[in-house]
Structure formats: structure tokens, C-alpha cells
Length: 430
Image (cartoon, rainbow, N blue to C red; front, side):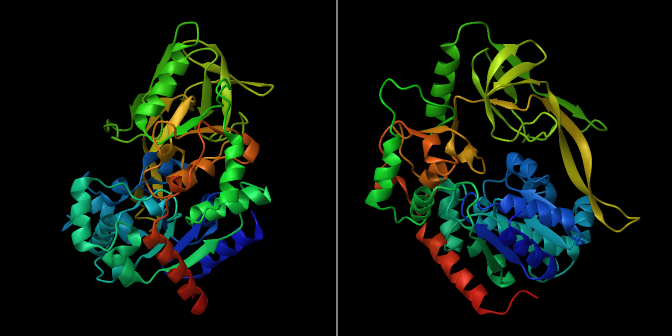
């Protein structure tokens, strides 16, 4: 952990303020989150918008923690009591939310309503401390035509900071500024400018030196904007390999007969062939693997896959993916994570291609960016794509990048600047 990261952890331990921890891609926001949770004396619950993101920080989904319905939106949401969930929410000092950039304003207001009800406290978030992590200049919250029209009638934007609860709670902003993923000065400078929508001709020239020749083999994974493009890469890649495919189906093993949750941290089905690229989807120090690490399948049977990573051969078998839930311990008065069941599946994903949305939070040694069949359409999408690799040499492009590939939300950028300026002007967190 760097000195700047340790300083943020110390601030989070010392303050009772509501805090938003921001930072560019590769500054180690998740590292700070995990260290804070593991070292604090506060009673903390951790959640994230998706099962994948929650698994990454050993938390639960927002829907699970707050018992939110699977609604298209939460405009005019009115919560109902839930005795077990309310005990957990009432017993927590601090609520941590990762990937907060993907949390919509209406969802944060729904969280506020749940906490006020559960804690029987009219203050913002029922008096609980809120600590949010995320980069507002990466991928924004997901919206559609229906809920966006409703959101515009109530909120200035879809971002969490325009929620009524967020404004009432007066968040203090803290920023991680040291990029640890990349070390090349020219690349770091280019990434910083693309993030804020100020990419220069020199930056494009630098990045476009990585455009692949027509006959060049594309390194995996290929990152694309559309599911159809991703599916095409994966299907063509698998079909081009000889041999029979082997299918691994996810299993659910419940505790006390509980039904499988709708969202899982692992793939429902993995189809592999010898010779196909794969990505590891979790960390395991004993196996020597890390989330996002790539390899090539060298051997397959019905129960396992052998993956070659450089000179290392790793036998990969199905592993447990626990599904946890916070419960209130009446004896100790604390909340704790309890396993509700487990999924069993290989910690792998077919690695020919994936969407840019799915790649957020990942780090790759090599990746191909394919905008040839769909340019970035969301703010931050182009920036997320090119910031996944550690070095410029690890980046391959199927076509030249354009200035318009790097959109930036002016609303999010203005909030970040104003909130950091205000936080720096005020006294240090209590």
C-alpha cells in the first residue's frame, strides 16, 4: 500500500463524515476499501451495484443488503419493513458502497429511505456514515428511455450526487491521485487527458501507433462496446479451434434450501476448447492466479481445465463462490457476513472478448480495443477501455481512435472539481 492510500485509510478511520473516495483508473480505490474494512473498529457493511463488483470487495449487492425490489426505477419508492434486514442496517455504523459511479440518484434515495426506516432515524441515511468509492468519469449509471425520462423530471442528472439524500448528507470528497497501474509518463498523461475529455492530437498519435496490421493476430481479450460484437468474437474464436468443446455448468448448493439468487458472481455456463484464451475471474494465492490474469487452455476433461500462463501450467477445478448475507448477532451486537449458499464453477471466463462495461475494474497485460463495429456511446467508455492495460505495448487497436471516442460527462466533471475544492477548503474530516 502506498503512502497516499494509507493516508486515505487513516482519514476514513478517523472521521464520522460521509465520504466519497474518488480517483482515476489504477489508483487503487479497491485496495483502500479492503484495507479500511479489514482494519477499522467500526461496524461496517459493504455492498456494490452488481454481483461481480460485490464479490471483488467481499460484500453483497445493494439489492440484497437493502432488500430493494428489482424495479426499473425507484421514483416515489416507499420501503416496507423487513425485520431481519432492518436489524443489520440498524446495527451498522458505516455503509460502504463500491462502484458508486454506477449507482443512480433514485437508487441512492431508495437506500436513504430504507436506512431511515430500519434505523428509525429521520436524519439522512438514518444517521449511518456513508462511504462511497468510485470514479464518476468512468462508466455512468445504466439508464433506458423509460426511466431516464422519469429521472429528468426529478433530478438534475442520473448520478448519485444529484440524489436528494446526497445533497442533504453533505459528502466530503477525497481523491486518490497516484496512478499505480501504469508507469509510462506519456501514457499516464494521455490517459489523464482522455478522462476529462481533453485529449490532444499528440495523445491520439501516441495511442494510434498501436493500430494492428490487417493480418495481425489480435491479443485477447478484445474489448468492444456491444454485446453482439463480443459474442461474434467469442463464437468465431471458439469455432476456429479444432476439437470438441467442453461445457461447464454452474451449480447452486444452498444452505437450508434457499433459492439461488438471480445474480451470481461467476459464469452460468463456460464453453472451452483446447487452445482457447481464458481469463481468471478471482484471486488465489495458492494457485498463483489473480483476477484478470490470462492464459491458454492446454488440456481439458469433464472436471477441470489446465491453463498455461507463460511457462506455468495451472490445473483449474471448480471452486466455491459463496453467497453471503449480513446478519445481526444479538449476542455481540455486531453485524457479520454469513454464508447462505455457494455456487460451484471454474474461476475462468472465455477470453476472446468482453464488453467494456464488464472490464471496468480489471487490469490486463494485453488487450485489443475494437471500435470498428461500434464507437463508444457512453461517457467514460473510451477511457475505461484504453486504461485497462499496464503498458502501451500491451494495447492493440483494430482501428484508429478518434477525439469523439472520449466523451466526458460535464456534469460529473463539474461535481468532482467543485466537491474537491469545497472539501479542501473546509477543515479536515472530524
